[in-house]
Length: 459
Image (cartoon, rainbow, N blue to C red; front, side, top):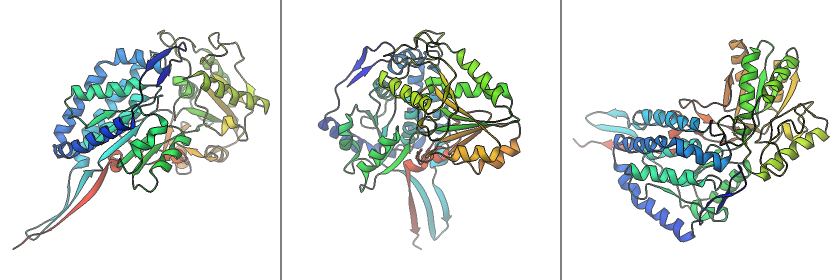
């Protein structure tokens, strides 16, 4: 396994892929550890997990630099991921005892009825490179807290993340087999999650790979949670605070070079304020500094690979050939050089839904902006997508936004913000954006199963 850094194209990490024997040994170790781990009290499990998270967060400076090299994110933005790790862990561990508590329904001299939440067993977490710590935390922390064992398969673009998780939980004293990290060749994924070897698969990644995961576990009665792609839309109403909308949507479109499942990729603007919004948006985008992510003043680094840059540019050029207009000319950003992973931000208008740029996930620093006549047209455009992860509304009228929410096909709807996760809220998608949810108290549901106790007491 080789990780090529998008920063300069050099080989940054090299590891041997796990053999089938190594995978089998990890599976057996997890099975051996399961009973003792789930027998620990919830409070003891929570305390150990907290130690592991604290160990990880305490090393954020070193790990941030590694992240910049592995995925190209500006180093100034990387510590925020560890702040998110801390916040999400604190919330999920803070509610664990209450959520996982036994529910007593009857307890009399003659009868005892109760419902217990038991761990599903062995959880396989398959995580992506774009937010490698955060996406992993969403599954790892509640899974371990609920008494499951976890095998993490990190992205080959960010393999050190998995190794650091393993080191963190070793330092916290988790027993052997409770948590492990495996670098698995895509061809051998079946050895890890197929043949009924695991009880739950938590996958975050592309729609195409999510389909493959479902095929591998088909017929094995393995449950699955899928967080897949997005083509997230925003609607700027005529009464929006323009400065708030511009600042928020430029950040939501271009943070992490647009490489987020919930990045804003489509913006619809009421025709009354379209030109004002567009002028502000383009001006703000031009103020970005594209360059080496190891420099502290860089706020736009490379995309993850040259192949990704070529795919993104191809989508833009297809749109231009179909009539779209670029608002940032080629050569405006000096660092955006051919045959590199460095792409400047791009804003397109005169776009429509026949174009891939408004239909397929771009996963790059590109956004299409289109005028609409009213709320009804905006809703039609927002919902005209096979994806449904998030959508954002920008308006001073909260009641109008509440009226629209029920008609938007998305797992999360924002008002006057976007591209943000709150740990107490369920993170989920509809349509081809996925299945199930993480975070919130509901995030424990897929990681536990109910067991009913029906006791009839003897006289």
